Image (cartoon, rainbow over all chains, first blue to last red):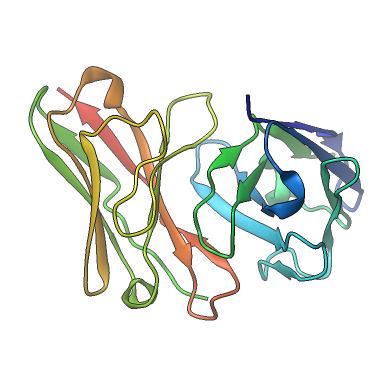
Length: 119
Length: 108
């Protein structure tokens, strides 16, 4: 059974940091391109970042570039998102999702972890 | 980056056919993928590529593409199809992904 399990969300003050983790099982994690997608309360899906299967090529949405860092440990089947300088508008459920290639086909999704940025 | 435009809401009578559209210039180069999201749940991929369904997705779901518009069609909509539907694709750079704003489908 394919599983992606996110953790690390919570309440953080503006300007603070959090690191999200996403543990994968049931598929060949090391061959998948992994993404983070977020969804603010009551809003739509927004793509955040992507990391190529080999962990070398990263891209970010303009809204998080310079503040967020995506990384992975293929030996641990784990994807990470380091989030710094958090702002109120970063408040959202963060999903990790996997694609078999560079396409937009996100065929595996986690259940999401909620990040709330508030004082 | 590029934008994908979806109608905010669509309704369909039970058992009828409904088409949900996604419009954007980057769709001239890339197919959209389609996701179903029910309240409190993660999105689920329902259509990808030219017209491909992941395992377990009913064959009443299909996809099509014409010019800058991709469409998701549900033939014989069921009550359990009531959900939010999102399209996404690669943006004009090819490196980023972009999502449409989502379409809330109501089955009457």
